[in-house]
Image: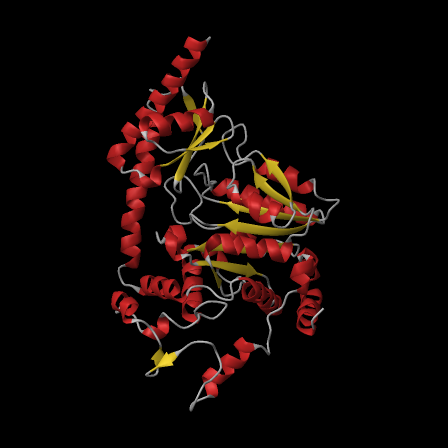
Length: 437
């Protein structure tokens, strides 16, 4: 083991041994090189006033060398904010501005100890970092039965996690905190679990209410008190898109200091929040009372970044920073959120009208981009294919009964026609089945 990795591990063991126990074997081995090219280049950038012949970029006339054909389309930005490598942790100003945004949006973080967000190549990369740092083969990953399929790839296929499911909803059509608690307590023999809390949920578009949020935190705390080390990850991909009757802040705030055996990790980003899907700008943030622990986790995270993508894209980080500092940023976000809320409310109005009740129920939704139908009479995959082939409509089939519909990409005036055609597709399949029988 490298001396730098050993020193980081020693820090974790002395400051919070539970966090050290959570690390995967890779997590224990990884470190960020202090004496490599990046650190020497950083030192040269600060001190080499005559000639800096360190890092591998080209310079011309005192600026990063660039092509006019590219710069002409980006002329509002200084070349130094576009073409140079971004630091592995991301642009420092962007990281600090994002932290300020987190505090403003999650008041429960006030007075709590958490690190400066580390820039990732969007949220999937952040989740991949979590899996690399904390997941060994056989470690339990606890997620609801309605989940984003990429968790299985990121944690199950890549890192060999044992996927443990619990029902997302209880009998009252609320978040199933009791199911979460049972799934957690079942890991007592292993002494470790990774929990992902994805709200608004993909695929259902559900965010728990305030009391449900308390129940979730209580369930995690009870499992920690039972001796289970828990990596509690809030996947806040669709954060801020809350339309009715839900939490409006991340559970990261409530989990940040809930118990020494709980490491709260927030994975979020500009991707969906700021409608910049192709920019691939995300963040990963850790909470712990010890600054030394936060620094050690940051160094290990940078080791993962350095050994995989080296650093994230600089131009998109610059664009996001510019947007966050723009005086009209909040007003423009509210305008787009209002449009999204209008679409969600129109969907709910149609579904509650009763006109489709013979074809489906729907899972509770109150936020995000999606909602999910629970089909009563036809197979979801058969309906998906039929809608695509007959009506040119794309939906996502999940299992035998669930059909995910992204109202986020449908104009409000077209939503009624969309659901009418989905309903007609159900009728078509029913008719075909009756003819065959």
